[in-house]
Image (cartoon, rainbow, N blue to C red; front, side, top):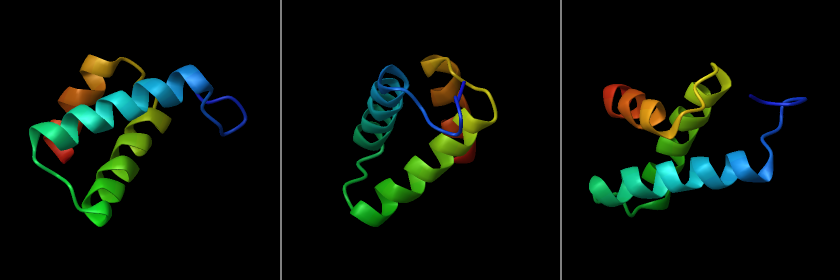
Length: 63
């Protein structure tokens, strides 16, 4: 979970991996599209989702 509104380095690494895998799977290469997916991913994370598999499932649902 976020501590003082910030993710730690391990959390950022995990979020980056989830983002990279999602973008690769969906052939997302444009920066603007990637940033939009990153915003959605971080919103899910802020809501308390921390498991990479669950984040991926939810990102597929809202993405």
